[in-house]
Length: 121
Image (tube, rainbow, N blue to C red):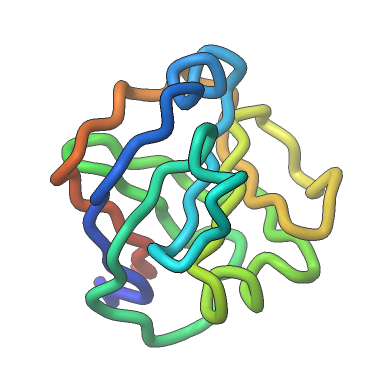
């Protein structure tokens, strides 16, 4: 298994639980603009190695999900801004260029200190 991206959650915006209920996690690196912080999961990157692809796995703590679709600018956003728009919608094609899609599942509660990453098998 190869770690492509690893990070730790440092802050959770007050609107994040509502986004989780809708099947979406919005991650942003710590340099995110103030106006985005209410609905974002802020994080500190500890490792980034390669672009993510369909078939890779997103994991947060003990939860792991296969990536089904990667939008055209999702890799650029993740590598440059720490921005990841993860949607649990089961789509095999991203609706928006920044989306990363996983199966339609109930997303876990996110906590400060949680570790997340993307791996390739």
